[in-house]
Image (tube, rainbow, N blue to C red):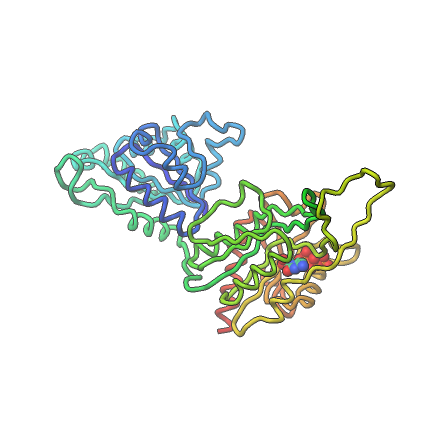
Length: 403
Ligand code: CTP
């Protein structure tokens, strides 16, 4: 899930570090938006290190990506913790003089707010009025708790504990933990088959779809091993709930996936695996010196990892493949998908159309899910995250049915 955590300027900001950690640990994609005041309590490097995303307070940074509205638009959930009396007043008034303000106005996602302030400020009619207004607009308020406050006084005003805020926030969006206890392997990215020490045969897979699948599984409670072939730099963000194994070639990937699959309940082969490798890899860089005319490379076939996994599947193990298809004249994407599903004997095949301008290097995707026997389980058009959600819904439903 794409979660924005807004942090405003109160001492409880240090506790929000733990909120971000908990959410990241559960596989969520967390973007922190502190206010200028908040970074006097906890600095930007801390937020960046813990969320693994760039952090800014200003609407003037990263303008090319229209960040002031982009975060709010992308968010599935916004959590503001701590929310000071001042920030509650700003929210109630709809002020947008910083990145958090614009993000809150630009979002249609559920907003969960954890107030923190001194008892007098909390009880003040202005604050109570603002809280009531926010509630009426559908904002969820968690706490504040009663207890000792920073000045040594005590009463209502303490920010609720991070665990409570996280579970309330995830509860609001109905975050599922339906994959708890499941062991999952996901392969992602494109393999690279070497020609010589400096050249390779590769493909256009960015790894985005596979990584979205891994993250979704982790956020729903699965324990995930991600076998990553070549993925784009900005795509492979380490997530504490996911262990990553790197694999360069189809052969490396086959070994890593087979190893991890030994104890896995579900294997999802989202990687674009090279069907062929160079028969004799040149030990030294190939040179044109002394060569006349073209160059012919002999390619030999790689094993089909997915078909092998399906052949060796244990009882109760679910094997899922992806298929990148370009339907020819007179055939549909589904026809091609059905043929591939039968050929590879997958429990579920995610079929998407590819072409020069389709399927790769973009965040949107359109897929058809085909089950064993050729039935269409679902058709999904949306972000790669949406595809990941639909895929796990289908896998989960299938496993429940076959229990
Ligand atoms: N795959 C695999 N091992 C290979 C090739 C592909 O495990 N050597 C897996 C991919 O990870 C994917 C699925 O097979 O899950 C389908 O990949 P795709 O490239 O669409 O199919 P191919 O098997 O290459 O078939 P074709 O090129 O004939 O369409």
